[in-house]
Image 1 (tube, rainbow, N blue to C red):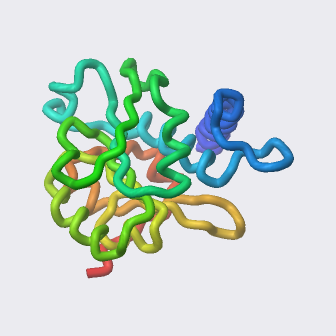
Image 2: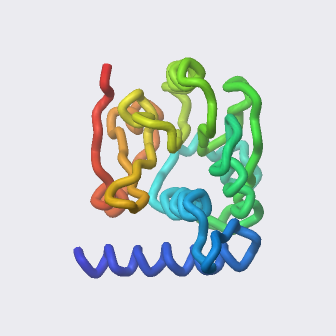
Length: 185
């Protein structure tokens, strides 16, 4: 089990190094920015998620990461454009409303008002989407994956009931690295 975590950690570091050389934002000292790290984490998370067949049926060999809202994380995701993942090309698309989530497999919610987050979660609850955000208490509010800072490091939490509602299956290796949370409702 420790070996798997080590191998996964090496993969994440390798991806961070590769992304930092391809235009991903880098802070002073040559270290990737917080948002670049989150972007790389999203890329790696997707490797450990399965969608129902119908969610990938009309996508022309792509995995589409839709971004709702603005902010640093939204911009950092541009580095994923065109990367290969699960034998598919990653497409990053900015959207303005929930109705635009057609053909999206991942929905990243950037800086938006709290009331909008609640609406997005309610409107997408039955769609096969991996919802991700770094907004406070996102996973507890019904999102699938939320980023949190813990002891100065970026971690993530997963809401299993939300992933079940979205019909996305998260592999056990990813679950072992996360803190599992419940809806706060």
